[in-house]
Length: 295
Image (cartoon, rainbow, N blue to C red; front, top):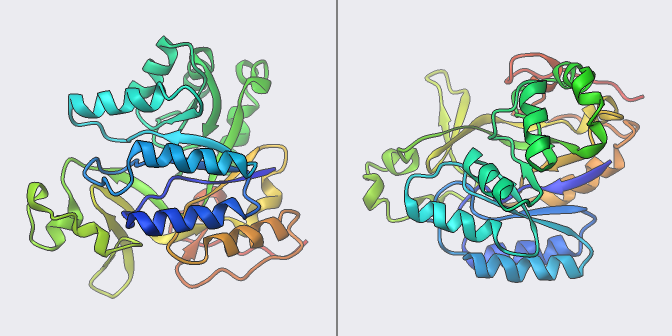
């Protein structure tokens, strides 16, 4: 089982991003995803910058993948997506079906990100035929669902062609919109947002009237209010999951990576922090927590 770091979902200053990946280069992570996947107005770090970081990480022994935008709203974004796919060195994580099509036309292997709606064996087989090398399961699905899918005869025949990755740590990306909710929360219009989401390095928390955190606003992206944390579910992933994904946070990400590695066999469980959940993986409501004891 390998461990990956997904693309940074939040808007961080360039120097913070560079420092983060300097630390990642010295970490035990196997795979690193780079790129802006949420909002095209976030230009602190350019594709050129990401490629420089990619080369540094590759020299440190990491496998590097470039992640494309999830919501494309203009021809300019399509051209930028093509630049990612045509980078000539690193495999691309497609977060939009348009990226899948471009990679297929170029006969390039690709990774299907969690935003690609792949919910059955027929879609998965189509993606494999198109050049899929790795598939990130949609975030709201369960272990039982994954096992059932991979047990389908049509998938068993092609199982060796692709890797399976599961989003396992971080606030879950739930939806993307043409509207910017972070700007709206500051009474700004989207076109005059002044990039205010840079003021919220872990998103802006949203609470219900009874004081319960229900969502995190991250520009045009809405995330789960609770942090998804499958650290104690790792034993249930054996023989199903090839790669466990952690989503970067402003603090503590690499420490959590070490905790995940220590608990890969389930012998060093960690009590989930308040606000953490693992419901989806265990066929529960996403906000619920299924307690797991040490093996």
